[in-house]
Image 1: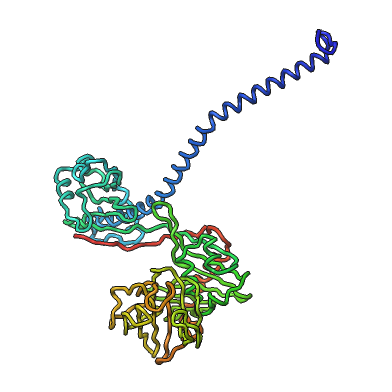
Image 2 (image 1 turned 90 degrees about the vertical axis):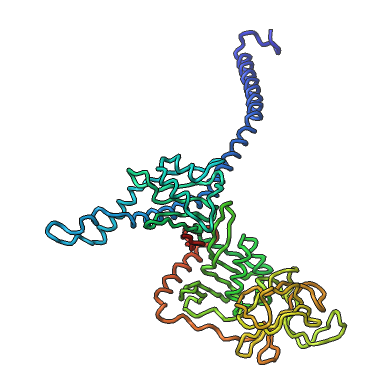
Length: 493
């Protein structure tokens, strides 16, 4: 008999027993599932970790493979252009007619020559030599000797690095080498090719894939703090300050609630680390007033920043002698000197910064003094012409190239922040003089650069519209990606 007087065939009792049995089985299955999960989970996590590492490795090396491919395609086109064309052997017909020189025909012939080049890829193994690899891919003994014996002034192939890659270009149907590419480093590649009877060698920096990143933020305490929170590199923040420095006093004008937006170039190195580049466009809103700047190259030597209307933001002078920092002592006619214990004029501005922070010349000019000068400690004075001079005091060090009589360029490092002379702590005391008279460097009015010449306005309008669209796209990555070219770093032979 069952408990509670239920008979052996009582339907309700049977239902209870079946339900209880199913619950017990479910509990057993659940417990078993948990045990299996606890055993399998570590292996799943390990698998995911390996996948993530693989993805990171692919991502960090992807741009290098793209860059190498671009250089290789250029090499193939150069080789193809130098290869003899079948049409050259029959430049005239039997009737004496000159062969066609139509550009489209020439392009097709060049493309055909490129397709006739076989690519042979080899990975360097431990103990490999260039000659050994050339023999391995089937080149003739004469070719092995000819290419192995080529002198390379800047890059030695005597000791090849295991794991590095070669790409050899061999004309179809021959055992002759027309050119090769060798991975010197993640940033450069060696290119060698036939040039008549000689072999030329050239090391090229790889062009990098450069994307445009747009970041915006609200300023609470300072531009530096707000932009840093958004991951903007220091160099980009410094560029924004330099662009707007003569319109906005970043030490006093900014208020809580002001905003900024910046579009800048960003590249990644072989390890995937982001590096900030040129500012393409920027916007700062201070107390409701908006400032916009767009970069435009109007000369072969570079470009400048302009308002959307084409007015220049530029000056021949930088506003600040440090890249970014906070100002601790404003220009005043009298200040209690903490070391001397007396009130004395304090002409200039103190920039607090860590010991060793680079100090830069705010404009090009001639050094008239560089050395120790009493309470000013290590001191530099520069004549910028037109009656304008600047001085830099309490330096930790003075750059070796900065000596009386030498010229410095705008933005050039001339020394480092220190606490030499009468100084209570590391800082730069910066002063500006006009015709020998102190003037406040924070309020002085200097002539602006001229506006953009009218002949560039149509081109500037296209550049401006694209830059402003990127700037308005909001924070985060934009789809705009461009290739940043780089010149060759050495040529040999």
